[in-house]
Image (cartoon, rainbow over all chains, first blue to last red; front, side, top):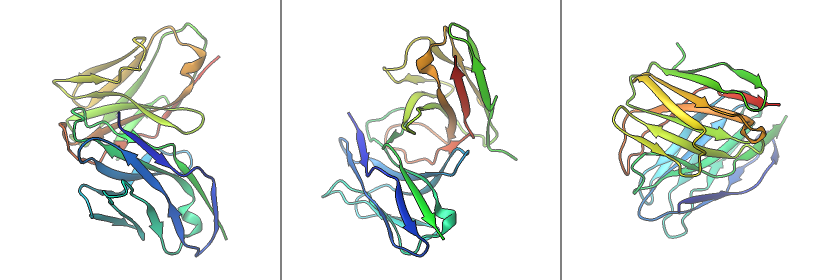
Length: 114
Length: 116
């Protein structure tokens, strides 16, 4: 079945540091890929997505590129802020998934210190 | 206006009880979902539902059942609650349904269920 693996946290960075959170996936066909973010005490929000190979999703300074050859969708940001502290989830929606259900990775907690 | 809302926010109950969590979306979406998030933050889909089709994750016990009075609501009923049901339950909705769609899912704030 489909699966998503992302780096375990927590990831602790100083403000303005460069961020990378690794995400790799296993799926049949050509899934759509997503990054969701969960701020403390809240539900998940879509951060960015990509629907085909070599697409780059971007939002709020975050970027991720759909790499089919390495089955990866790593999240990056050039300069993190304290307000970016949250849990980040990589997810996929498989092409054979009639229910449009998302398969999530285990989440990576990011803590940004001033 | 809250796009996806859930009630209650917190639910504490005894083992063996039956409880419900309500979810409403005002986005006009066709599809709604229930997810379970365990204590380690791992998220797992439970159900996907639109007005024509219910798709159940095969690992979900049949003590859990979704009930939809109309397109804007999807409630989660849980019978004979067990300790392992303690988790945060998230409702979500999206525009459509079908294989290969990349619709954004909008999540509610979650319901923290504690079974004693």
